[in-house]
Image 1 (spheres, rainbow, N blue to C red):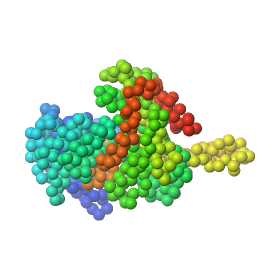
Image 2: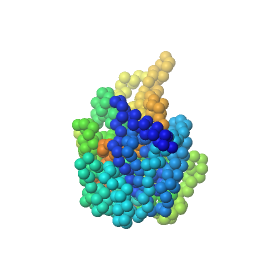
Image 3: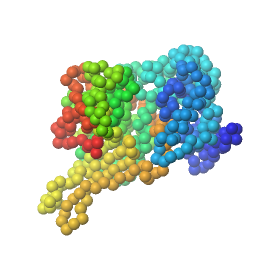
Image 4: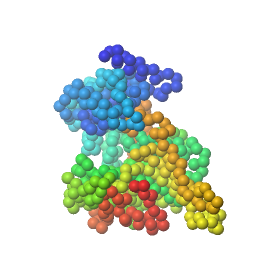
Length: 510
């Protein structure tokens, strides 16, 4: 065992050569909720992938904090089983668990049992971590966020000294409305500085989302077109085929607007619409994202559609409606779908509508951004059989596949002029060799090295909530809810939202 561990350590240490990415500094990764599903499915596999890539320092450890009665050995076995399942079921090609890397990791895993609200837990945790660098990951229910950070502050665990950092990663949901988000930010800042807080949005760990900035600002032929002179409108879609599954209690009190729009959807919009930052420094990027969100005009009720799925069919199988799901109120008014028309009041985007939609039990699982360019004049083709030109659309595919598609017109071979729509597609999995990943690797690694670019700042969070706050105030109106069958494209009212502007949604199920 010692030889295996030494081998893995030396491989990781070899990553320090001149052309290798920067390794993380030494330290401890503390996971509150370390015995939970998020940790097993996503966090531990992400750390494993970072170790395989040689990005984790040899003096690294994981401390899992939870109330479950188990030993460190049992926790290690749980993590090992989760990793085996992960590498066997994910990725573009079959891979096997690297037992040398697991052996290296397993000796660095420790378990602390205790309540998140018990001061004794933090006393024990302080003894475990000493004066090491620490990242505290809050993989817990939102009601514990403030309590945990309070106790990190009271116990001195949040205190930094020269050469030693303490950082906190917080999962969503970050608040349930504007007032609660403002209050949570204020509470966190009593114990932490803003630079210590990493509000995570796992969408920003996806390659295509990060590539939006690269596409726009590193290619000379995109950025000159990225404005109101050339773009007709933009559609942002985040569609799911799943229902509420085992999250009925959470979802019934949350709904699609709170669950998706202030965080995921607003981040996609901000990355698409932001101005070029002065640098890729974290605050420079986040400044521009916040400016975009603050420039969104107050949404009117006529520009919002709330929907709820009824019984229908998904992949040929009948599924129950939302109100028939276990744990859901039979008279529930909670929305499982929302579509919105947003306007950004700045020089670049004046007059360009942004249509966003997200929902459950839709025709397909798909997250994408579609940039619809203005049509070319038809004058050249007035004496030909061509009635209309194929719309020029650039689609940024985020999930389930990642890539970019360009749609444009081309002449169909033959003696007469007939135009047809063609597509050029770039797929990450075909161009770059990909292994199994969770989408959290980049985000965890960035926190390790102190790069907050992909994390949300307090003003960014509050600006996102500001956009949707009017929608939350209307949600109790019984007339403000439309129904759609599971497996469909969504409620008809969402189609009408675009039809008023003589536009239409791209099909989700295409």
